[in-house]
Image 1 (cartoon, rainbow, N blue to C red):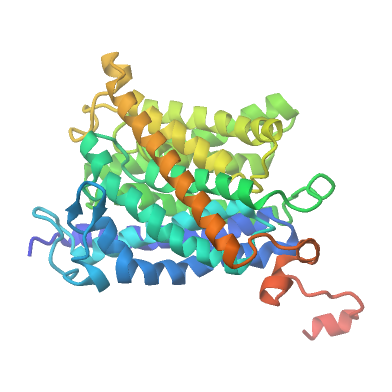
Image 2 (cartoon, rainbow, N blue to C red):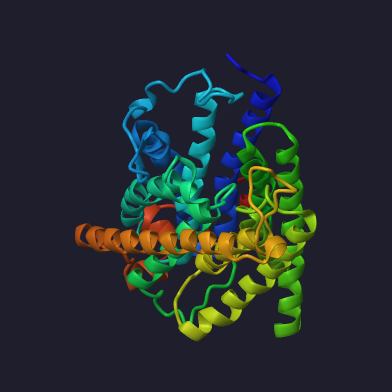
Length: 420
């Protein structure tokens, strides 16, 4: 077996880092909602770790990375992980096939959890479980195959190193479609979403940033120079995204916020994801800076102008940031950084690669949006999608899960609190 122990160790750590992003997202989203919805928001991330794992092991991995069928989907050769063992997946690979599978599984778990931000505070839990299950199988898996599994977008030459289209655009735009179909929150205008716990948001954002190193650098599947490039460009873009958002917020609202700073960092991370192994450090700075300002515009201005209720800005950050990142990959990619990449518009003056990236973006928008819309209509005929006014007012924590994140201490004496 052509193992490299360093690569195996690196990929085990990268896999663990990507796994950490899902509970990190639970804290990030959980802090952003009202306190009566925090557990329901966290649960939508946590349950993905169970449900998507089951789907991925039984069928999803095989359809995503099994032998290609018509450049559209993988075959059933790896059903129940048949043939996925300690041998390398392909000739020249230096890690076990089983390790590649579990690394990709962490991406599959995180992606449907990302779109929950768009429907926060009103999507009922049974409907979410059904949506996540079928969306993972019918949206995420085919798009992953198109780009990474030998499908038509990869064959076309689309560059997506770590998931700009596969993860961020698919989840962000699907979240927007879900928000439109499900409708706005009850009393949204008089009861706006004000983050109930910004320290949770900072903690979650920090865990996402930390995990993103495994997300991007780990996508090289080896501890080599390209992984180092992806690691460095990832951090640079996040830092510049933070600055871009803060500057835009200062110019627009007069005061920068810590919530804006961490949101900008996430925007920069989203945008660099498809490009991280194909661009220079200077290009990463541009990609991150633009992402911060652009996503701020989408969140603070565009959403209000168009009137959609993307509660936690899943589309505003992941959809918009992912779209910019995919197109920026076609602009700034260069073979001087990665011989396996392409030379983009900035280096050739030719829009060819930008055009390919645009095809990948539009294909993801159309397919993910259409299938998500159909799934929501079918699920809505089975079980209600939207929580009732009473459920939203009482809180989804108690109405969906029978729990409360913050027990009511009113009426307790100081001594009784001390003894709890």
